[in-house]
Image (cartoon, rainbow, N blue to C red; front, side, top):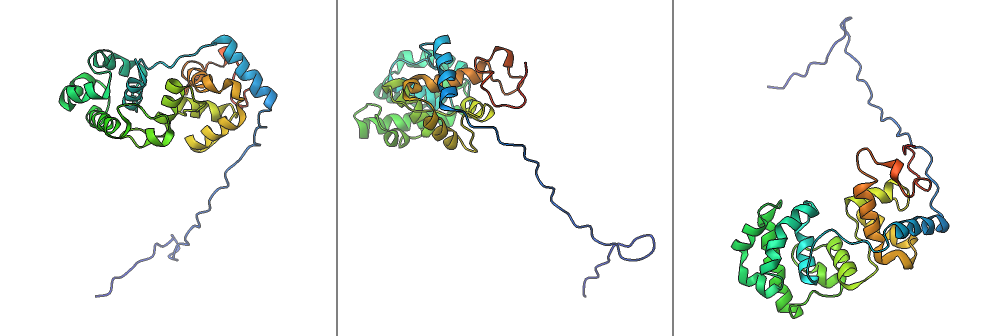
Length: 244
């Protein structure tokens, strides 16, 4: 039997006309002017003056423990990772010692960290690969680090910068926000922001640049209620909603 389709009718009995759904044009304000080289230099000069030797907040003993700490820090706070790794690194600060500890015991040390089961599996796997393919040493190349289980581009950038002094830019949620909000390096993806920052930041600041931006995003340029009154680069910032 053919299916009968009834059309909706108006009060007059006539079929109701379908309303066309029109997409509303997205209102776009004027794009903020890009920062000038002089403004970028001034901003990072201020960061350097305020904090000449910034330090990452993940506690570690060597390149290997730094690598492990960064892998554990995904979707977790640095403070939470530090609380777990202080005891862990006291007994396992090399790939060989981590393998001797074993995955089950490793889980006990890091069970307060989110996704700890999967992270424990990755730490054991990356430790095995470091011994098997890299002589137990953390590689000094981005490709080498990214080949390790649980390690991506951000992990590689952090390790290369902090352990080996490379001029890399690790873009986490804080750096991504600061790059976009200030207009310093707007981008839709972390990679776009990373490449944008590397393009505009002078080489003399690159060793510490990602730490300055992370700390700025973590303690001043907050996601909610940014502390514009305390901002070192308030006058340079392009954010239209900045206060004071």
